[in-house]
Length: 481
Length: 95
Image (tube, rainbow over all chains, first blue to last red; front, side, top):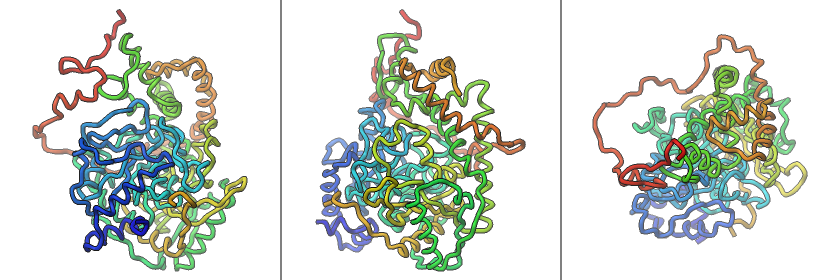
């Protein structure tokens, strides 16, 4: 049985196609593994539900998948980690999930997440935090923490999540797996519950870069239901590059003075040497506006969120409270009881930034910073093929360590937010282990590689070669038996 | 820096009712975040075009053809209080 679970998703996919693997047996083995979740990573799992015809896959043709609970699935509970959507069963299925079902990937379950994808630790879920499979006293990262934990913890072969400012890459780094945020517009957002619409993007969380390439190929494409979707021209093929010769990797000069954990810095620098060993060239680039990324992001994302979340009003779906009073009282009671602290904080922040008298100073200015950051990357890419940074400033931190200080939590997104604002693709691959500041067993460190818009193929090819060169094979102890 | 009165005003705009404890906490937390965010207020960005959207797309159109929409019973299935084929909500005016 465990031999089956050791296959990568791609290996299983190819064995099924060749008739060397029973899809039913393989899927059943994963359902059994998923059922042993002790990490609070799944909010819902598919058993043999009779009323789930909408997500049924008659004949599986590829590995079953875990889906972040932000994707609507017809007839299947979809909460976005919020109390306000408890018990909600959407009347339609998101394009991303529909494409997976059409490709023959059964849905294993829906994964836990920070409420409405707002968070970097998964502690903002209304359904309790997800535990990191490497150390259950630590966070898995967020907001796609459930999707990262199931892949790292042996509870799913692969998963999808969403990334607005780092919500795929940072949990992938904290859990020692691969996480890819594709170019904005690669994958349809239809049926992906909106947080910040100009930034939100679906993407894969997988064990290997090849698995990420296979999954991106299944997900990408233009969708008439999302007018901002364009797809990836020419599709995605499996990477098979062995070296990095002829490729230039830009390291932001600003990294020298940025503050982050020494263990993360050591792994980052060792990875740069590995790039050179593989024939790649390291160059310095300047991203002078990137340091303002957090400020711009925490204006733009909450502003868009405050507008997107206006729809939760207790009228058409979801929770209603205070229905005995007048309409305004019902709205206020529903939203006050239905939303958690972080969501309220972002709605307040966004409403303030968009309010009369402050709009130009905050939202207008943040949009100009966004332009500057995108220009920084364009300039950098005129001299290098990729820009590389650590994925996060630290390894996975302890549960409760940052919950009292929202700004400290936001600063965790320092390295991932600039790529989100520029809309460009970026991947995090596990690069090694480092001891947390304050001591303790070693934990995974992610290495982030960013590429120009729609250069996913080049990005995956290079990430694959580097992944092979690094040879990261550490696994969480004890979580999967 | 944000004052208590502003927090109460913004909460009203956002249709949130905050407890006294939440108002206190929000004043401190939002002030801390805004102090950080205010760093971009001092940047000289005169003449820089704002970016609202990163993909160069305009006027994405489709044929204007009638097609079925969600059946009424399906649309109402998740409503907290459906009545007579419609969404029921409290009156805007207190009784």
